[in-house]
Amino acid sequence: QVQLVESGGGLVQAGGSLRLSCAASGSILTINSMGWYRQAPGKQRELVVVTTSGGITNYVDSVKGRFTISRDNAKNTVYLQMNSLKPEDTAVYYCKMELVSTYWAQDTYWGQGIQVTVSS
Image (cartoon, rainbow, N blue to C red):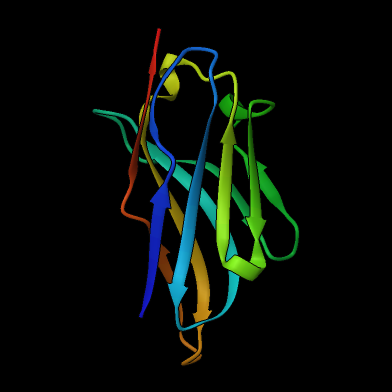
């Protein structure tokens, strides 16, 4: 059993910053990729950024230069530092991990989602 728990969302003014965290717990052997997605009202969920254990990181163009993903492998945690926030960044943010459990099962897990609201 693996669980992802997100924290750090909230309300911020345009130009402000927030830091999201997503901690995985349970029977984890290795995490192959970590990422953040978001879903704005009336829109489809979109990829924000993903990083792999091999060191490849891809950001959606709209957040490049403003958002930074980082990971603490010892804590099975991924972070998303969001700077220079814009109202269009308002969405529910979800973390996603692709991992191998100690039962040697590879699967995809999602966090519960956390609201980020940027006021103009």
